[in-house]
Length: 156
Image 1 (cartoon, rainbow, N blue to C red):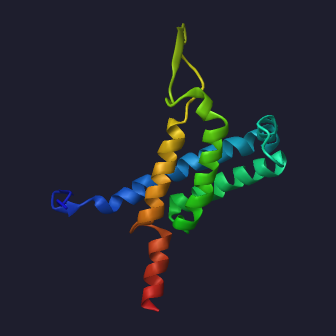
Image 2 (image 1 turned 45 degrees about the vertical axis):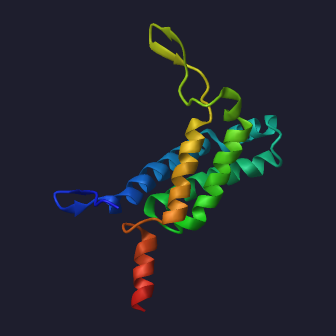
Image 3 (image 1 turned 90 degrees about the vertical axis):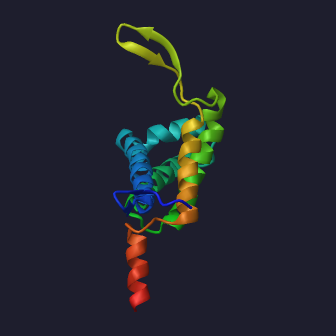
């Protein structure tokens, strides 16, 4: 494989870090939104979708997104944490977003304030899932807590 370097430095080692920062922040933002509105509001949506135990699942999803997002962000237990995060994306995609088609951004009109957007499709779910699969397969990278733990265990 050709060396991907700029000024003699190989920057491929930065890829997992960039991926983790974006994905981790995104999950934390979604979890925080659910928590700040109250998981009870999210539970109402889950009940309409006939998700079993909607109050429990609302809290579980909120905590998975917050704690899982933080774990991805710092690169802690990355391979393990990707599984529940992928699960939340699959459930969201298959219960809500699939009905709105692929595109995550749909301009459905224009008013004095600017464009009016319709409900998002499943594109963003697939982007998150793809990024999580990359982290699952390749690991958190050099700049992560996982790498620090591995380095510590290697010395011991």
